[in-house]
Length: 131
Image (cartoon, rainbow, N blue to C red):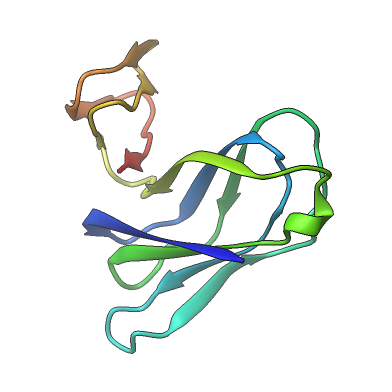
């Protein structure tokens, strides 16, 4: 099983965060699509393992040499005892100083949760793009 996601603001990335709200731990591979070759490139591969409850599963990797707009998340659903729920996925470029959020999402910046859609800058910590 896998999810394919498209982000409207492509950028080079060095991290992906997956907000697993139920049945956490089923993610076993994360890919990004290279726009030049249209091939999926693995940025994370591991063993799925139930963690109980919810989690923000974050993986870091070397900065991509291309702007990422598509992410594929492979799930090993039998590795967890129930179904899987993923509420949000963030692609992150730790070199950027702006964060974008969409209506209905929230992000923690500058010591506060931002809940209105828009562009936010935080000079103390760089967070993610959520679409």
